Image 1 (cartoon, rainbow, N blue to C red):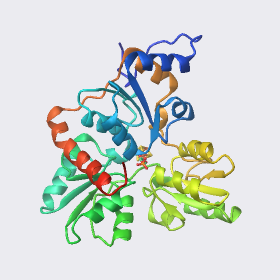
Image 2 (cartoon, rainbow, N blue to C red):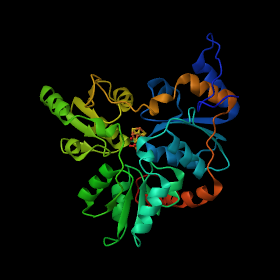
Image 3 (spheres, rainbow, N blue to C red):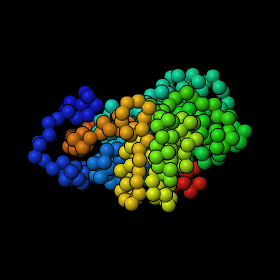
Image 4 (cartoon, rainbow, N blue to C red):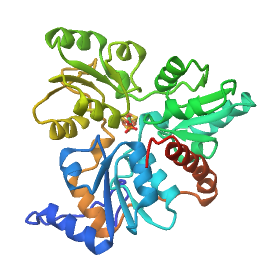
Length: 328
Ligand code: 13P
Ligand code: SF4
């Protein structure tokens, strides 16, 4: 089977009802479909579980299914595989990468860590397995603040790879973590000017911002949080309108869970687009999902020596998150 392009490149009978075929194959393979909030609407509709990075890692660790089809980006599939080495983990298009993870090559990060001995290494989950293997504790945007705060106050910390999330955590915890200089191309793209213009047009709207956004955008926010935290805020808050500064896939869940409220995507700096999409997340299509279940490819593989080291900081994250009541 040809997976040279990163996905199964096989013809599909145009008369097939792909949705029911996917559900049928899922049963047959004892598979579970997990999707991140940034996935296309049709993928979210087919998923057994939809969540943020923390929820997806936790669900992977807990599932009884033999096959995990992770509709998200590569590092999410890798995290699932590291937690479940005996399961088959499929990401329907392996070229669904992450610019933030790519901004932190393992060899350069290792040199950075070696140049600053005596530091605890805290890494965002948006990293590849080799970077996690160099890490003491992994965090996501749902638990970064609490996990950093759980470390002794005078502990020197290296935080990678997202300078924006790192800056944000420094500002709300008073820590002085040493930051790796990485960023996400999607969250760095929002325009402060366009956001201020939108705010003037929608004076009662609340502004929801993911912490991967730079400080000038965060300063306009009513709520800064992970995709799950932003969704929860939208559900619980009495406002009728929300301006959303994160990848636009989350708007589908917001609208689904709050049908009477209005969600307005914040636009990027460049071009005429009204919303900001992660090109990597959008690589997962219903056709690739169908073919991946049909041929059980492409699978995620992680070098066992790296996985053995990378699993510890991920499990530590899950343990601390449970102790702190962030997850059950
Ligand atoms: P969450 O942890 O909020 O799901 O974010 C993951 C991500 O890739 C944000 O760009
Ligand atoms: Fe990575 Fe940014 Fe896409 Fe999230 S939105 S997966 S951080 S490139």
